Length: 126
Ligand SMILES: [Zn+2]
Image (cartoon, rainbow, N blue to C red; front, side):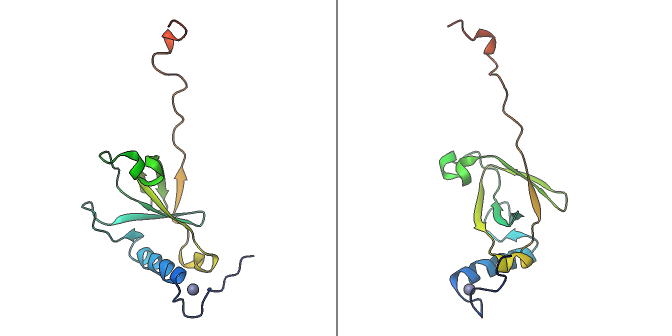
């Protein structure tokens, strides 16, 4: 069983301030306040990890996107399903904050890529 005590009595260290900010986001409807034109950014918590699900971004080179532009789909407990290619993780939520930052979503596996390229009929001819 993990230690569920806070790391410091008044929760004023860097880690505590980092995670108490995430608790405010959770209380604010599981959203990160932001200056994105699309408005606040959804926050997902899956298996004790914290994610910020930024809007799909088709204009920025993939190497500058979260997880290199990998596609993620989150299914939230309220039924929303959000797919993004710009997901950031804030890491694992410390044990003593888990009860204040419960999971609110699951990750939906991406569809498997096509087994064959569309031009596979020509394989071996060149
Ligand atoms: Zn602390």
